[in-house]
Amino acid sequence: MPHIVIDYSEGLDETHDLHALCRSAFEAAAATGVFADPSAIKVRARPCPYFLLGADPQSFAHVDVHLLDGRSPEQKSTVTHAVLKALETHLPTVGSLTVDIHDIARASYAKRAL
Image (cartoon, rainbow, N blue to C red; front, side, top):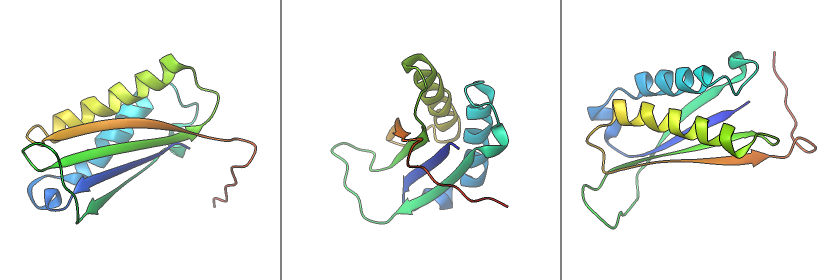
């Protein structure tokens, strides 16, 4: 935990290095110190083929950070701003860059790992 999910406007993978973006988002989250075990961080990116934005340029990346509940608002803000900075570095010409945090209930979360 956490899961960092990057949704992006289809085609950005042709003009930007999204593997490097995933690595940078991972490193940014790990560097915050919010997560006791950085090896548990998971990052994935997925294209969105259908989208419409209210302003130009018609491109976006949105990150949802899913993490176990119990973090303070300050810790959450630290994570969102660190990940946003990674987005800004790798996607400087993309029209909209956003990051949000979602709490996962510890009581109901289930995990299996090798």
